[in-house]
Length: 401
Image (cartoon, rainbow, N blue to C red; front, side, top):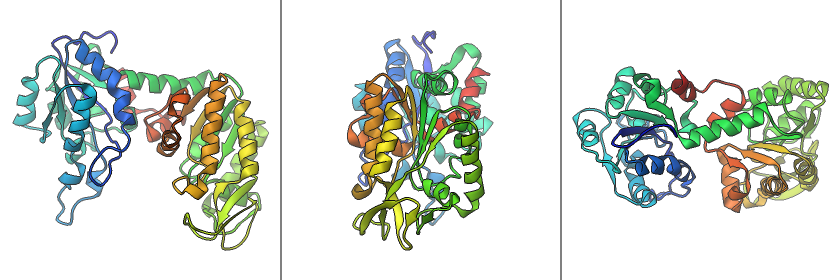
């Protein structure tokens, strides 16, 4: 989009305003909004008018008992006040996605004005990639810019299909999309070594493709979180009632063997902070990860694991982190994730390149106030995961085709 002339143009921008809100619908973390401001401000400064499309939550999965959409819960009207404040201008809102009303409001926009359309997922054609819906949105504008990396892995009407109705000279990436793809490829294609990948979260099944790809790419792979116990059990360890995927034990063995054959240092937590129940107030103790007693479960990595993982991170030149080391939402089981966050920040200050993606990892950084000490914090959990797995992102392909 750097090469586009936006003066006196109507610009349809797909953004990702799927931000967390509290029970009063106040935004609790506006990272995704802040991330897209350079794109929006550039277009406005150039004399363009903005028509913004975004989804917000998953209203189609939470219909009310009568089958209708819960408009009050999922309307983007909640975002207007904050959006007006950060853009330093009033933002108009259209509560309809199709028909005469959005067409008239878009046509009346003057340079420097902003129009936000209602939640795209209120329309059943959005997730189906409906062409008629996309054509109608495309007719509102002269130029289409996709800056919603967080939704780039979805072949939806607003992320992918709409791009068909703009020529190559009238569709492009926003600054955020460009940075996301560029930084993801930096890790994948030309990382400085050693490259350490830190993978956490609950399930091995969620990260199979990523782990498999990383074994051919990384020098060190650190695995923490609930998924670690599937690997520990696969090695013959006793894991009590820790989270485990018994149907993935053979796969875990295969991944461990593949890593060994390729000379990859595959690090599992030597010790764990365990609890007698899944609660912050549970009784807890630290034990060897392979000797967890019956009735107890691993909820965080222990001090030995923290030390070993930190040592690997601090010796790295490139670091990828996706997923927490434990149940960091509970203060008593947050130390492992906190330690990793601090180690990644320290390695970055020592000159390493760090990429952090995935909602929980980013939330942990924000909680600790370390987000500014990381080379690049991705706004797209699922999209970054698929990019790193080597999958084609429909939202990216649509712009390039």
